Image (cartoon, rainbow, N blue to C red; front, side, top):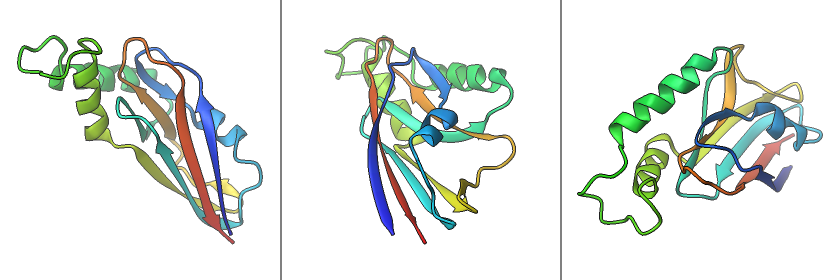
Length: 137
């Protein structure tokens, strides 16, 4: 069985946002075992799996990525959409546009402290589209 849906994430402010519950609300019945693949259809936001309990992890990630891809750099040519645009593309490339999660006993098989994050790198982003493909039996 293969099933695919596209969901619209709400607009988030810049930062790392725990979206596991939002994703799970849209999954309906999952197979007994399989794989869930999530893909974000944007070049200035990303998806990742990371620490879901301590919010300081999200702040630290945000601070780190701002240091490795700072805004307002004279060497960026791509800046017509604002000073946060090219750094957002760099950050999204470093983290990636997709995550794959095993499905076990009809549930996403995330670790105890793992959560799915939407990584928003734009200062004034709109909603984001995520394609979820479920493969399993």
